[in-house]
Image (cartoon, rainbow over all chains, first blue to last red; front, side):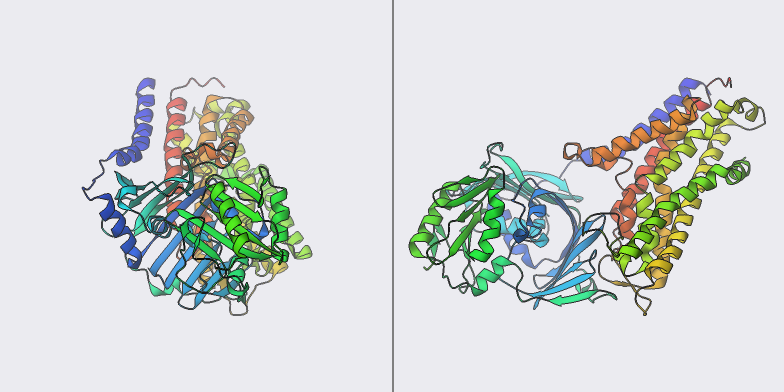
Length: 369
Length: 271
């Protein structure tokens, strides 16, 4: 065999190996004539569909590094590997996978258990209406349905189908028409049979001086997906030997404020309608679909560490209402203390002007509707 | 031919000195953990290191996680880089090929010898890790059950089985490095040059893994799935990255070994 022939054999072999995944990727994707409105409606109705799979989310938002926000900064600013088994809204498990271990959420009707391998700790908390977002909120089905909630037909359009997790996923785009929104558009691709969202991309308008409008803020997508019902044993948590189990009544500062603060937020704020399904609670939640405005009343003991952190955050600016930081489409405004020692942490995917308007309205009403 | 290469590898003092040095760091870490009782913060440090504070049963895996990112590939690159270039440097390659031995067979024998060196090293790291872990960090719960990464209880048998699978996976993860160093070893008479070339490639791979701008390249980098052996201790086992890691090593093996074969079987041997 000649030298040239040997090298040709090697080159052809390597090219064949490299081309195999590209050929699979290049296979044509089957689309459907289904309207955007119908697809969005089917996506909203898919909440009872069981599924399991692996997903990965990537966030580009740089939240102020505060212990009060927990792991939210990592979730919105970094890459997160997820595994999930979803039997129903009251029976699911979501794992955040790391090379050093993992953090898991086991959810049932009475609450959620958070398992952290590195500390061998299981923490049980009750179900709450308001809490800081966790890994489960970044699952494509959860995020996709939340963003399409309340979408109007004139805001929706179809996108070409794409192959995601081995399925020919149907795409829909939402451009919010609310003037208060800081979201440019949301794109959701869903499984053609079950309409469970497989990939979600959120594009924002800009707050920060270096951000460009229309840049992707958060992406989350399944890399493998099954719509078969997962086994019940997978979503059940039994504390392993050597672990510590704790019970906590309060999940985070937002759920604590919602349960114990005396405020009763107004029905509408900054021109946005209320979003709460639970009437009782001090945390204000407004908006529709991707347009979200949240107001958390804080005592000085909770507000001061956040204010201190905002003070040392690059890009922070003082406004007439308080301290403001923007990252991509997300804005955070901590109002100055009122006469009763209460500050409002206003945040969400709304414009800075909307946050200012909300702060002014809350100051005028004292936080009571 | 294979037996000759294996005996040569086992009789070399360098083999055993390398293995001893590879085991020194995990042993030192175990001593420090036992004395200070201070583990890494959540999400930092090598895998399993925080969990072994309360249960030394998993220390073989922590020991593997300690040596895998740097020390093991350095040892593999040195051994593989020396395989052909070392013979040429010593002036013995010409005489080696005088025997009725095909060059392809010689190359395969060299690779098998390197793989056996990796397997021997990884097994010794795991066994010594187990002994050191049990002696210094204790054997955890009296029930014999061990907490898996996903918060489920694993029996001693499950841990043993999964540890053996981890040993096999780590060994196979070194195939790409070994094949690259072997390829470079056929191009040069400098064993050190071949080893450094392979290490430069691995350092570039490790660096690109930290760069968001290189996200599109990352699934194809040789070091991308090395630590996926941790996934064997999740429940259910997360097979995706393990399978991808093995396939990727297979592609590197075919590519680099094929190029090494094409070069070695064609070149003039002058030394």
